Image (cartoon, rainbow, N blue to C red; front, side, top):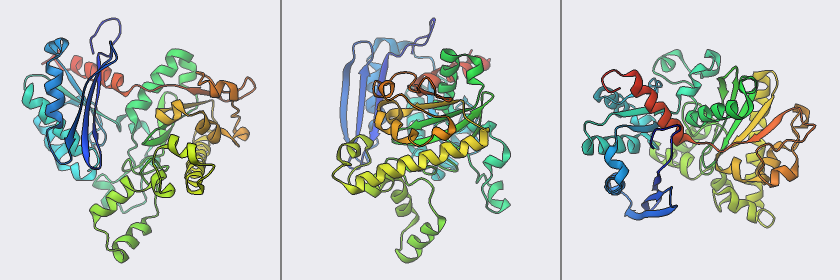
Length: 377
């Protein structure tokens, strides 16, 4: 990113951890040319090095003065902050709580610190947006001693929701952005959030990103008795159970075909399992919209985002079908054309499609943290 009138994306990249290998990719956003697409054997720790090596070859990277990181789960660490040795120690101490994200995030932080020891790094926590939730929405019904250890509902996708709220205010005004809003971030990971007066008041995810509605390969909310059954009678280890609910469940588990919504939509007419997986996704999403209508005392704006929410008219239509009693009506022509507003002219609820931008939110947040720190600003 470079700072001017606005922040500009120069490069985009990804470290994708797959079952058998890891893919490192980097694209020049100005030319839309892929700079690298490198496959690394699974278990190899060279992915951050490959990415950083390539970034260092870029002319603009010579002026690097700040690095921002999305940290999915920090437990009681929620406030965006400079990454010190103390912060890193705390993240390492809780990495077992989020084995799907934190170890890889820590590895990337350390890789950048080794290569650029004097460049400040900022942790931007996905949970921060949800810290405004009332106490009752954060509580889990477990003994107090567990709550005292940090076992509570945190919520995730916060960087996405923060961006969507800012963008909603930009395109629709402050009054709309401070109204009663339900946001649906629907992608491989999926969640919903209830927002009013510009603050998050509830969300579907809880203690970990595996909770809430079913996702591509994550189970979503699960009766805890299932965990007991699997460990007691199927002899699952904690690691096996974690893999099951994060990588073998959700749309993939039910369809037994794919966790990709677009793939399932293609075969739903000939594959009953795929159709059932899609139906459950719609059903659970609708239930969350309905429950958040109760929390908010009504809905004025419904926002679809994330890869599925932004690009799949069939999913949006399937979710909104039957929600007319809440004042939600969509115009199918607008919906099929992925219009910014897909609600009908008579709909009491404005239904919007907004592409999220978590990277931009990380950049803006990191800059704000840097400005507040007299040592670096």
